[in-house]
Length: 125
Image 1 (cartoon, rainbow, N blue to C red):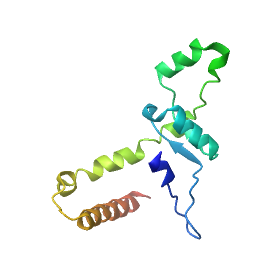
Image 2 (image 1 turned 135 degrees about the horizontal axis):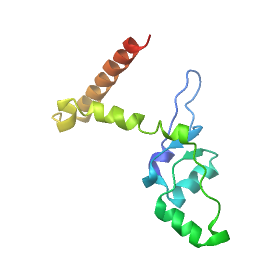
Image 3 (image 1 turned 60 degrees about the vertical axis):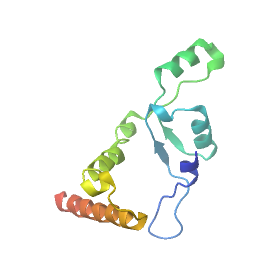
């Protein structure tokens, strides 16, 4: 929940948005509190329901509520950021955290992000 409170989506003009269109997550983030928070803020939750929660809901019958709606096409994109973090950790200095100062570590992360961005732009046709 504290991470969701700090969420900011930048845009070209104006202040960053604090309410994205959707939040993607895996089954570990399918808690009632997270879903309630997203629903109160009008954010679409693209989070599948774990099997045990499905069983609990079905056991309660009509009091269990509706099944969770899931946009399967949108859910396929949830691990894009995870893959980028894994790629970033391939840099030995970032993975082992040789730098003692946070500002130097952050600079290394930003340099790696810039290099990855340039590499991604060169791959586009």
